[in-house]
Image 1: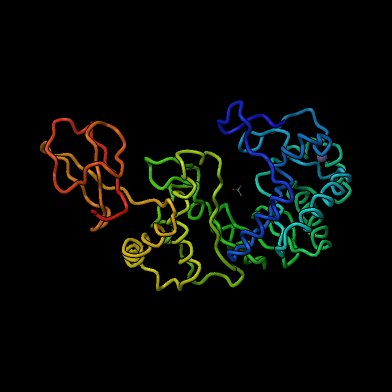
Image 2 (image 1 turned 180 degrees about the horizontal axis):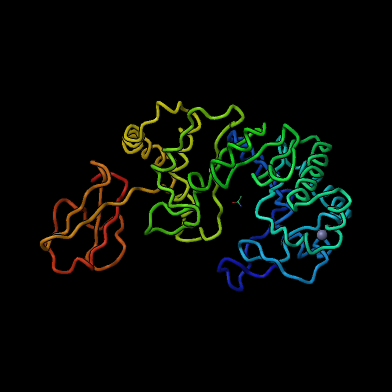
Length: 363
Ligand code: ACM
Ligand code: ZN
């Protein structure tokens, strides 16, 4: 049993899929032309495995925490039995998922664990390694062999480019920043650009909304502004990341975080850099694409109205000319039946007013 995290208190957090459920999910996605690529995050972020099989960890008494503050989540690299366990895990994964790739993670490892471990330091000495990144590279290359043996190709987060060479076909997902993505491409790895500062859609969309902000506030316009001009040919695509911790409320917040930012990502991926103009995209979005999302039943985000208060008057600037803004004057959240804003409001109590944009027509 894992300790509860991310505010779930004493309630169960997460869970698991049975193989039967996974097969149904893979089929559901495939019918919609979506391929699911599985990730087993290694050698860090491995708390679930370590909770069940504590022997996979280094033999140390010291506690070294990950950036998220988790201890006991980094596999021992010098323990040969770990590779048997991993082979068995990947064998099951490879049999379940039809994707060409299997993603092995590789991110955010606190390597101090290895420096304090007799098996890891012994392996480093035997192989003349001086840096723990070399040990990570050793581990990653062993996984490459396992995954290739299972008829798949390997993918990982951009940390896997550190500490040594990789198989030239190993795919890298650059999440830390653009620079690291370019470094990966220059090394010759097929690379997917997923810099958190642009493409992590668990980030807030404005300072006053829910969401993370450790990488940036990722507005729709910022995501759309990603420059794909003159990129190294090894940059094979873009991807958005949606990490669902903290997205449990309000209802359908996952859709709110995803759309329309995913629409902007699609255009970044599929159109020529010079053809992308924010005003043009925003016009098409508000004129027709919102309607498409609406008709698909997606709970997408609408831009917020801008409200000023001067000379006893509340004045709203609409986020786009045909936007419908509704308001309340009792501090409650506006809903579909709240009054529609149609001109300046004179009041001595602006603090009681709330405004929000709604999708729909006047009737
Ligand atoms: C990551 O966000 N740690 C890949
Ligand atoms: Zn170790």
